[in-house]
Figure 1: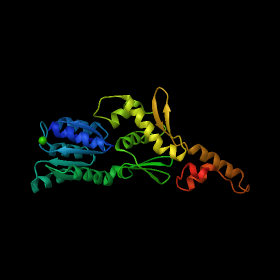
Figure 2: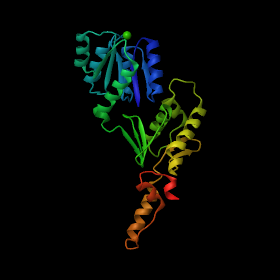
Figure 3: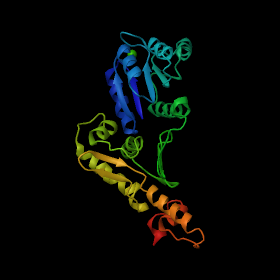
Figure 4: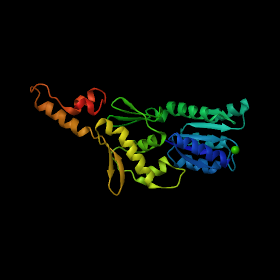
Length: 262
Ligand code: CA
């Protein structure tokens, strides 16, 4: 998920980017209202964290302009103006939530999650590739119902791949999404891809995370073909008694993995 942070205090902006990146979000920064408005209009963001006191164009105006343009990206206002009127005005202008500075980082992240969960455009923040689901709101991942614990970075890598099932995503795209802040070392991606495979594929006897030589990586539904063949077969041998398909056994038990098949 991409988040836009519009904040002129550069240190705070950088801190927010670091913190949110560590949570697995991909973060872009804008340091004044005009840049923020431009990025919010042109970029594909899941949410915007918006300061009110901004150079060039203040946060109220950014908010109002976006809503006038019918851009309904959820906006969380973050401001040192903590008066009731300021909060009310921000919300009336089209902001979805308001947090006064100084704020608790824990609360900010929780509010952001809540905002993403209930955002209209994000009604189904559930990415599905075969029986692998990546829940963007809950920041959780499952294979055939079995929960898989991912680190925030692994989650970010899984997300960028799951957003484009079956498509090759370059190392640099993955890098940009999962490590927006750091020196670009493509080796980071390889290491994280291996770690991700050990979690989402290996225990389930699967090979959904594929290397596309010279291009990058892709996440595929490696189950669909077996399923299609299985479905065709059972159609043809309808009276042929019980078919014991290894893949099926594993799946019906909710991703029990290799052990089930042996
Ligand atoms: Ca400010």
